[in-house]
Figure 1 (cartoon, rainbow, N blue to C red):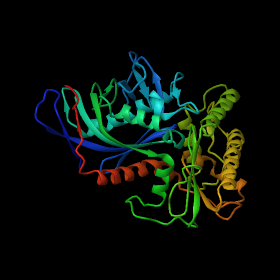
Figure 2 (cartoon, rainbow, N blue to C red):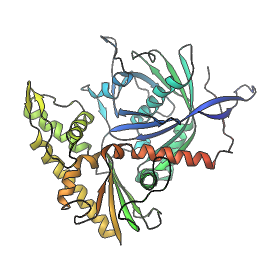
Figure 3 (cartoon, rainbow, N blue to C red):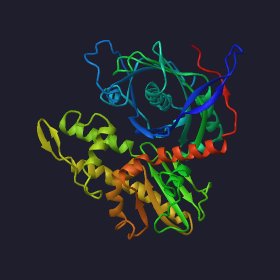
Figure 4 (tube, rainbow, N blue to C red):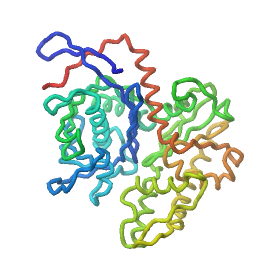
Length: 409
């Protein structure tokens, strides 16, 4: 079931009713994760783009997510981009653009390009196509890292960019039924969340919004969201209230630089690319731990046709990064009185879990009381949190009349 809102024509025509759809999107620095509609359909796209010329295309992929080719035109973007490969396809290009450490999500064209493309893929499935044009309206729940969310000006400007004007995504040579479709996206309302506060909400609620207990916690605790480009550390006080002053985003932490070093060392050692993107590398490392999440032995990769171990290089770099994370956590534990536990979430936390456990002499029974989520739960936690937050926001504002201009035909 879609949300219905009222729209008014630019020429004074009578009010018409258009249908809108819910979207909860986590703009991760490594991957964008989205949950759509009451059916909670899911989509994830690596946060990689590449400007390309597609004139020499040999064959179109069967799955849109394997070959996203688009043009994106939006008043929210800082400049005009050419034809773009997005996600997996971009990750295979030597000219790919990945999120730089320390970048602000709210000010990056790349984050917006991924967000609009994700919405457009969903829109083709759920809105009517007329003359190769889709007019799609969305209610969006999303979030920003703590250091950006605390900045009122960044927060205001980001929401304004999302809600102003029409964001156009034109699919180029892509899988059916997307090829040559133009999607015109209007976002009629935005619930903007702090990543740290949203993660807390999801930790203390199940997927249906029902309260659940955190093991070993009845007082102050820490949520350490270890991501690709940044780290967010939220301090939650007894009773569930966030500590605004001592909750911080750390722009110098994040695992992307470490993944880049691993790929560089492998490339220099073996004379070529072993992994085409950070996403491909991290997937390989996590898949190697399907049986034992604390294993530091990884599946061999084929180099010149021969299975070859990459354990030495991977362990060297992940241990260094885990030490930085552990020292930062210890500093927070000294800063905040009566902390009872630290919950590590985020994709990077899953990657360095065995090294953190080793540094801590174990997990729950180690030097500090630290906890980890299952890798899949950790991967989707912010998207789930934004979904729940959006539901609560809509329930509180269901009587509010929202009137915006429809996309022009």
